[in-house]
Length: 483
Image (cartoon, rainbow, N blue to C red):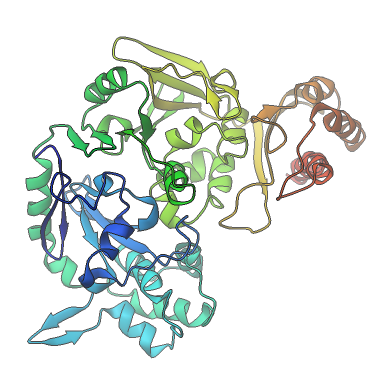
């Protein structure tokens, strides 16, 4: 069974044995798997990079309270082994067929009644996003509905009737035939998950390792130092779907429970590296408002349900959304190997463009953020061409502590201004001890401009980035004065 992925589809356990299915490889996406069979072609490929939502599916897994938890995902970014031990739900599954008669699900019926579809290409993905809302929200606000639909592009109908369909459908506490069959599905999932032996999936070109304990993950990391590490795969999958890269060795951490905890200890909030961006977003609303603010514009719900905080840190992207905020909060990264562990300051962890301090037998296991003192003012900003679903052109996160009218401490961290996320330390030094007033801030803006030499690219000219960075500092000043 080691070369087999198992999940629930159409109410029964489906097995994919890579020694028999020669047309499939371990990194075949769920989208391409579904499209290879005639009964699940409702899922569509629009962009193959998680932008359009035409391939949206819903995954159900057993939650902490022994109930199923439903999440929308972009199936174009999810490798087949990542859904091992979960229920896969497509648009074909949500209607009920009894006595050869089909009864539409509430979200489908309301899409019909509100005229929420025209060309139909995007409709299955939109229906699955509505189904995700239906299973997770009772009488959802417009804000919740719009957020859930951010990752679904519709160029015919417009969103008004789709939002109306969601508002009218989501009034029954998620009750449907999935609710009635939940116990049976949980039993099937438990049957699959009772075996915690590491999945070792192989074909002639690839080896894919999927451990279910941290100790096993660390052992595999030591034995396979060149393996590509994935947790959510939203970054790595693009290299396959858009650049046609072949990954010969993959270490998938997405089912390691020790990486999926959030805890408070020693005046810190500790996020396991496998905690999803959506979980961090929800947890940080009150504890880290600046982090919550930036995660509100971190891709779509489908992407946030898969992407992880450890993955975002480990990518070391100069425009990674979480990094400036983590710099501002003086976060630390816990790194573990089979025989040791160490904790590194986030600034020391990032070594260069997509380069980190991670040794080839280590894994990121925790992101540690000190609790914010009320005396600090922290805020974050993202400048992009679109509000949602866009990569940063420039981002910034700033932390300030005043002593009366003077600056006692200040951190100014920027993304998109250099090859790495970087603090403006000369500007910080200039402001420290000075009065926090507009005159000193405008003087500091001139120093800030000299600290960075940003690149010009398809997103922006260097001059715009410099101007934007200066204006973000001024914006931060004005907002602190309003408060």
